[in-house]
Image (tube, rainbow, N blue to C red; front, side):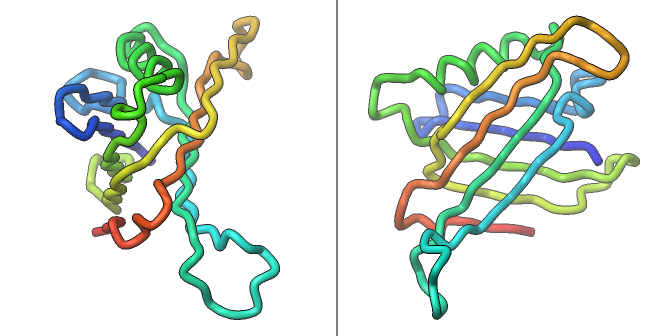
Length: 145
């Protein structure tokens, strides 16, 4: 699978774009994606509107996307409340570049961010991991195609 992740701030001024098909090899930078719709109370006995959309994105740290990773890191530590929430479009593609699925999430924020650096080897590579959650009461602002 190949992934494109495009993250825009509310003003559309800053864009973080990982997996840009115009940049050679970038489509393989994201190594895994988890999309989860989570009921907040795991002891629930009936269907509830108390749910959150959660995303986990894991990708390789590579010099070709260094600028985008720095923007992602800076968003994770952002102190200005006006810049916490962003909109995300995720494209999941087959290896022959056909779009299998598109997700759109509004008002998402970074819950956890991590960069892991290892001694270079064939089996271990440097990677980033970001966990995102949609702002409460925005569950209806999710679209998938």
